[in-house]
Amino acid sequence: MKGKRVNMESKIIDKGSYKVHLIKNDKFKDIQMYIVMRMECSNDDYKVFAAFLGDFASSKYFNSNIERYRKEEELYDTKPSFNISHVGKLLELRIGMNFLNPKYVNEEFLNKAIEHLFMIINNPNYDDKCLEIVKGKLRNIRENIDTSLSSKSIENAINLGIPDSPLAKSFFCKEDVINNLSISDLNEGYNRIFKNANVHIYVAGDVDEKIVNIIDNNAKFNKNKVSDNFYHIEDVRKNVLKHHDFYDSNQSHIVVIYNILNNDKVNNIDLQIFDYILGDLSLSSKLIVNLRVKNSLCYNANSSYSKYSGILKIYTSVDNNNVDRALELINLSVEEMKNKITEEELLTAKNNIISECEDIDNNNASVLFNKINVDLYGYEDKDEVLSYLDKVSINDISKIFNNLKINTIYILGGGNNGKN
Image 1 (cartoon, rainbow, N blue to C red):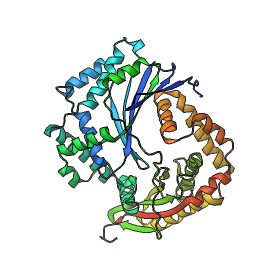
Image 2: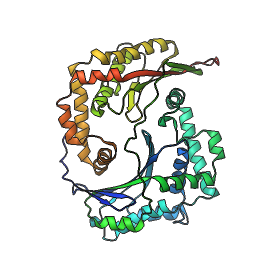
Image 3: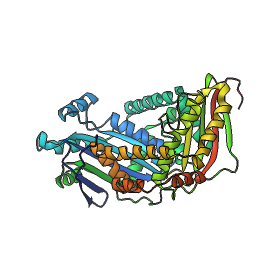
Image 4: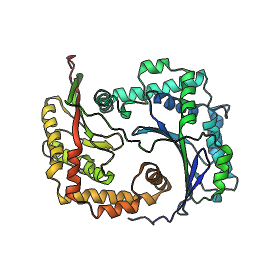
């Protein structure tokens, strides 16, 4: 069912050290607010991640976490959160909060909710107790990666195949780095992003410019710029890297990495359609048809891409004795993207994107995230996407094949004989 289209008024208020983007709509009862901080990535980005694990675990604003939780209950379960990622050459930190529109509560609620968010992010409490909490969280993340062979194989393939890529600058550090993490590292990570990041604050909901004054009374940012050219152009290997890490398992996990040549010039919608047809999770994708439906080699085979990092990767897991056959079928699936895309496949991919576009207006969060992608990363807006889909052809999608060059074939599994 199509949702009611959201009537939006957008306005940008430049506060010097940051910009506030107001996305006014009256369809929803909540308000979504995200602080988007972006800067050049580095090998020390894990310190930024660790710093905000600590910031959200321990704040000078509260005597204890129990006091914080009670405060959030008083604010109708308003809980700030954060997410960190690499987008091309940029590190992006998003600090977000979802809260009720004050008109359903009381006038003072808006002040209290925004003050709560900034009190947490402006007042980290990096002491020995906080450091141990951060180390514990990092160890749990590392354990989850190391015990998930799918996650481990993808991480290993990226580190071996594209070590200079931002994708290899992992936030999820290894045990030796965790053990050596210090309070000084937390402060370094926190100060680095607050001193160097370009800041945009997005607010979506039934709001007016009053919220800008409240934000300005609490925000503490520096004025910084980031490059408009945030595409990472990966060096292309002359020879494919093939690597096998043996692991005592009946299953082998396969990761194949392709460079997307001239990724800064490839149309994003064409690339999205290409990926849908090649390896989305439906039973009609080429990878699933060739590996699962026709040959019963696996349960799952999928592809995913990072346009700004110039990488497309394929993942599957098969019985150890089926590795060679699986690699043949992966190659066949990619080759079929050159001249064996059908009208039905193209229509299915288009319909998936149309459904995603229609879903944008169904909640405040998707309205806000879509605006961030359009404003900061050059994505097409909803109307542009729908208009473009009417024109795109099989030939447009097949051309993407010419931009692919295989980089790495990585296998994890196949026994435990200690060979590579």
